[in-house]
Amino acid sequence: MYVVMVASECAPVAKVGGLGDVVYGLGRELELRGNAVEIVLPKYDCMRNEQIWGLQPAFENLSVPWSGGAIRCTVWFGFVHGRKCFFIEPHSDENFFNRGAYYGFPDEAQRFAFFSKAALEFMLKDGKRPDIIHSHDWQTALVPVLLFDMYQHIGMPHQRVCHTIHNFRHQGTTDLGVLGQAGLHAPQRLLLPDKLGDGVGPRAVNFMKGAIAYSNFVTTVSPSHAWEARHTEQGFGLGDALFRYQDKFGGVLNGLDYEMWNPQIDAHITAPYTASTFSRKALNKRALRSRLLLRQAEGPVIAYVGRLDQQKGVHLIRHALFHALSSSAQFVLLGSSPERGIDAEFRQLKRELNDSPDCHLEIGYDEELAHLIYAGADILVVPSIFEPCGLTQMIAMRYGTVPVVRAVGGLKDTVFDWDHSDLPAAKRNGFVFEHADGEGIDSALRRVLGLWQQPKLFRQLALNGMAWDYSWSYPGQHYLNIYEYIRHK
Ligand code: ADP
Image 1 (cartoon, rainbow, N blue to C red):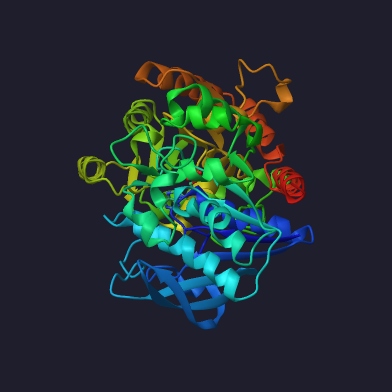
Image 2 (cartoon, rainbow, N blue to C red):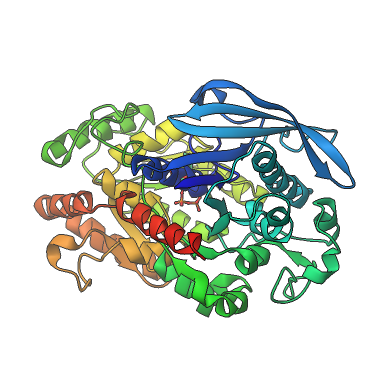
């Protein structure tokens, strides 16, 4: 099959979170299975160009109709660790992607509506006729809308779209004007509740709702979250739309790229290891401590890696930090937040704990340090309020680090409690707690720290986690089945 992914992120060249990992990892898996895959991305000024091999112009004067006129674009081509990627660079006063950051601007809806339009225009004019277009999240949610409302009538009649929702919270709500700018004819007609009409917030248009209505298939990133999105407030107002289109909606658990995340060959860690050389993990713990100026103590290192966002349970992360410090454990945090309040809170905490030899807070984004933390820590906490899938708990298990997670979304689908799971003992791989409060996370931390006192059992639990297969192998096939199904519709 010929698949084109259209997305706002792809690891490691342009990555903010799990979306980037998924676009890269799924792309690679599909190629390994003999499919042709191309990835279309914006050409951000802040992306990591050193991660692209052979970057060169592929289409010099792509004229993309926009707002009654047209914007000239250059489309670049390059390999990102083997993946074939096209980068769209618009030349206009708006400077859509030359802002020094990936997200966070007032004209966000215009930026990504333009990108979605430009991606289709590129396919149309470059003669690309993929079997499947796979779009992701609100940023590219207009792709199916534009394809089926417009492009299928002007040269792309056979293309089918699978749209994946990685986060329901951000839906791309905006005013009607953007649809007109994108060239959709008489956009008022799209404001119906079963199309793009928002009906929830004060803005009229909801891009994500459009993707749900127009795509041939819609997925979210774990089976539990597919249920939560339909039946709880975690759908952020889209439960009804998902119900209406339930026949083409499902949850597919994300995979992990087992090349990128592999303790046996990881170039960013000090001492590579496998399950059979597990004792070498201790060398990474030693290296992590010396890099972060922590003392070489007896106790475990508890870590958090991820965005610092209300979604991630920031109050519980903070709670876990103090629990660790009062329990002879150490705590390492790597995270960043675009929200000023949260950023300030954690910077203040960092200042307060500056002299502690048992705690380090690294505020920022650091891909390489993340690898060393997964390898060097003993325990990783993921106390999310909601979590569509979550990759960090799966990465932790891949590195023999025990996850402590809240029972929600994909965390519930991947972590099985050492004491309480229904699975056989050899399958249990972490600790799970229910309530999003201090008592909830304390109960799990007490249990994990209790098990730490029994090194043989703790090691067994870590090895149980390493034995699980969270690669793209199974979900890759699942997506191919979906593609095959919609291709003939
Ligand atoms: P989300 O997509 O909600 O951000 P996921 O758990 O799905 O969360 O994916 C997070 C990914 O981003 C993981 O690969 C994690 O290692 C990485 N990550 C998040 N924050 C940072 C950071 N500050 N530095 C390095 N890597 C990070």
